Amino acid sequence: MKTLLFVLLALLLAGAPQAIAADKTPLPAGSYSLTAQGTEASCTVTPCIVLDIIETGAMNHDKDGNACGSHSAVVNTVPPGSSAPIVVPSVITVLKVANYDAATGTGDYSLSEYAGGSCDGATFNSAGSTLVVTGTLHFTVSDNGRAIDSIVTALNLPGLGGYSIKFREVRQ
Image 1 (cartoon, rainbow, N blue to C red):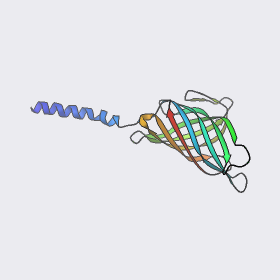
Image 2: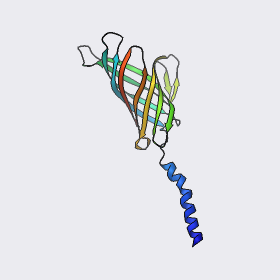
Image 3: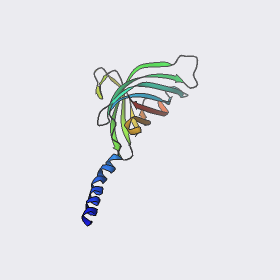
Image 4: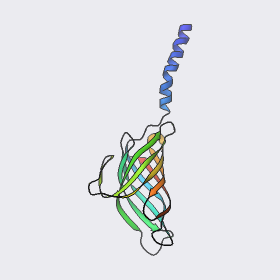
């Protein structure tokens, strides 16, 4: 009887690491659709002009969580005026994981956006590219890795005032 209890206890303890590991959220990998929305204040003129931004595209993440993808954007003033919105047909976005906590499914990316260049999966090919903006995103992985929600926590863009931008990626 004592031997049976010892064996059961050993099996329970041996299974504990798997149970703990099952609660961890790995970095997502694969193809994701991307949408982003928010506002920025362009302060290259006085007074600052508030811009509404809507973006859509696709991202590819590698097993380490780093990503590359392209998106198009529509930018308009708030409130919209008589001018048509500005359409930016192709922006290349590169994300590098700065830190990640698999226990909470949260982390931070460094963000680089380029005019030109291309993506080969999650790898950026910088040929013909110009760096346009850098920054950081705080992200949360949810729905068993099928979704990644991010907010912009830092954005380095000449003439930028305030900003509030969120990203959502959904696995394809």
